[in-house]
Length: 356
Image (cartoon, rainbow, N blue to C red; front, side, top):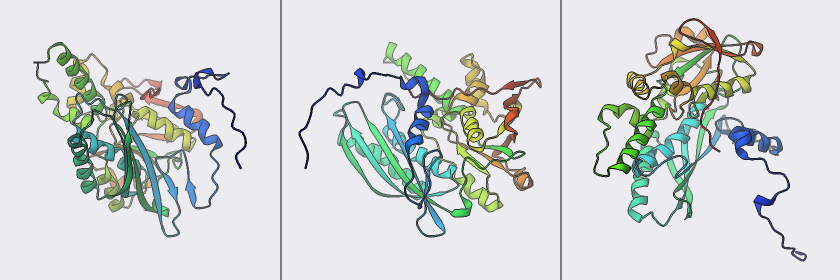
């Protein structure tokens, strides 16, 4: 029986102690939540703190579960983001999390918050991209939810993947002496965003001006329609290589390196001249009077894979044309450092995306 209800003012602005979320950041907030998240089931093998949760389903293959949310005005701008590309990207960011666990995506649910600006045709365009990604990554769409939104378009996708128990790559497995590897190139998505934002401002001044994007097609594509590196996962398996730790590049290379170091309780040394930066990224950074290494280290949204391997596996992949060895893990007391082009050793600083 419910007793007498007492109404009170639950205005969140009037709490006795108020700490701004920005003061501790997204990951500080996650740490505070994780301190109270007690796992109650033996079947939960991994909870908060990695790219995906790991659930024991009673077989040799374990379930991987990841959720990502994209909010209009925070993660995307519909003034230059085509809805079809947005749908594809929303799936990709989740697939990238499953890939970072060395898993294979299988099923997903899709939840949407739709503002009154969204028409049936707009939702169909969004789903065109979602269906295309589902086909490319071989994922079944098995459910979801739809509701109205007063703050623009909201997309939340939960993806279920799987991996053999002994093939899962966590963030906490790196050892001293392990080689730090990176797929593809980095910084392109960030520079693509700078181009799109610049063209948006030009359009505001002169709506008759058409965006000049032809010479930036690669980096703009990296921003609008990234690809999850499932190809790398399959290639590593074919080579017989199991990463000792792994994470995807969503918040910037430096931030992701810090995550691996924190979880594995190791330090790291990377080399500036080993950072894989594509020519168009380099040239565009110069156009904006920006150090291309800043885009590479702190840009984010590249969705490449950062992983460590045992030294004995180096010979198996040293000639891979799309994987670069950028450094190695060492003792935690040696810190997180970068050797510059002129052979100076400097402290590695992680800025990454500021979500709050």
